[in-house]
Amino acid sequence: MEIAVVQLRCKRCNHMWHPRKSEVRICPKCKSPYWDKEKKYVYGRKRIR
Ligand SMILES: [Zn+2]
Image (tube, rainbow, N blue to C red; front, side, top):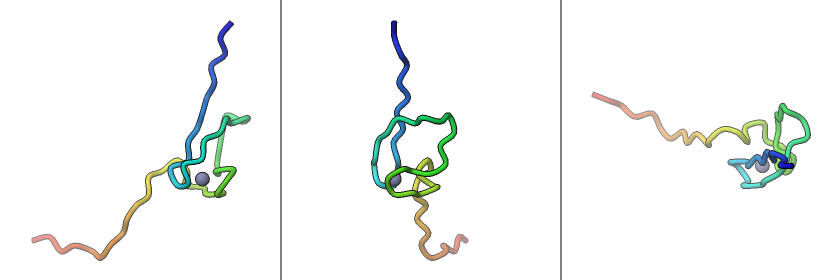
């Protein structure tokens, strides 16, 4: 018998955990709701000609 283990990794703090709920909204460690998304680096706006 094999059990599929879902392991999630926070892209912010690199914390890995196994979710108990199917829907994970925040990282259990850093509490970031954006754990699933890459950091968006917003520098100054580039002017494109
Ligand atoms: Zn995190």
